[in-house]
Image 1 (tube, rainbow, N blue to C red):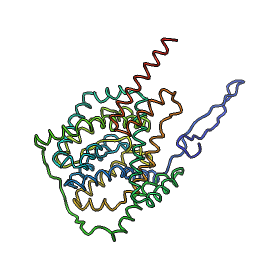
Image 2: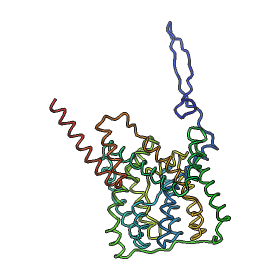
Image 3: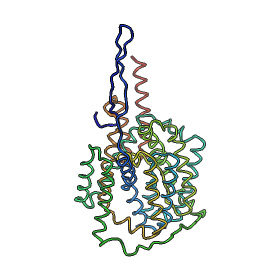
Image 4: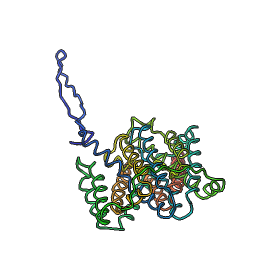
Amino acid sequence: MPGSEKHRHINRHTERTGAKEVTVRVSRPAPGPGAGQRWIGEVSGAFADLGTFLPLVLGAFAVQSLDPSGVLTGFGISALVVAIVYRRPIPVQPMKAVAALVIAGGLGAIELAAAGVLLGFTLLVLGTTGMAGRLARLVPKTVQDGIQLGVGLYLVLAGLALAADAKLIALIALGVLLLFYWTRFRPFAALLVVVGAAALGMSRTDGLPEALAFGLWLPDFRWPDLASFRSAGQSIFLPQLALTITNAILVTAVVAAKYFPQDRDRISPDRLAVSTGGLNLLLAPFGAFPMCHGAGGLVVQHRFGARTGWAPAIFGASCLALGLSLGPGALELLSLIPMSAIGALLVVAGAEMAAANSLRERNPGQLLVVVLTGLACIAFNVAIGLIAGLVAEFIRANLMRWGRSHR
């Protein structure tokens, strides 16, 4: 296909060996995108995941007295470490179940720190002992694809919910994304949407907020007490752990292997568990929000041009600069971006993730498992989707064995 990464220029060389004439085809990679376009892709991809990041973070700030410096510095340090370790656009996102409970008023700042410490320690143990990888290998391919389908559809639904707040803005953003979708300027799309949305937000408030005060805002250290650990353990530990192992570790490793097969061993479930666990354990007492990787974030960043560790590095440096230099003012600055435009990013990326599975290549039984798993993820959560998929695959496999034995 001309212009694609798979396109190859074929040269014909003729060699004569005695009376025989042998035609040899020599494949040579087509020229890739220029350096300028690659950099725009990295910058565009760096901020393409704001549709997940901003709603959860801003929602948590709206209902709880969290330290913006601690939260943003935590994301910044984590993204920079991830950029150095993986050298690919592996995302750093808020843990979704934790964020939902915070927004619902079930967790305060100190319980949030306790949740980060508990989850971080557990994931670190699972990763260093190799248990994360073993758990991942127990999940059949049909269930993995079903989870990926469910996460993609979840992103679409979340994007539509955000877009409903200002439909015209969302339609304009979606139009820009689709306009660039099938062109070589695709990496410009997300960057253009984010910059345009931010400009629109500032125009509605007569420029930057007056409360912005530049300085040095350092996070405070607070170690959770026993009551906070107990509260976090009872309310959020197991649901979030199940979500993290499935979506942030298992599915992220699967998607990364598809995009970067040469890095399959480096971006493994065990290593993702170690990086998630270690960073949460270290940063949660400093006010960092519990963080994880995420398959949806990887799809979004890759879709809009990110290919290397520069994307998380740019995102991390931006978060670090905002958290350390603006502190509480960073919250007002982020809130200028209309969520409806960010929702359009989620819709496009989620649709691509949901459509990434080759469902037409499945037999009816496998297709049923994939679809049931995806629907369970949407109707309940990823943890329930995993259980439903495993049960469906177990029934399918046993029915196939029973059918073969009775032929």
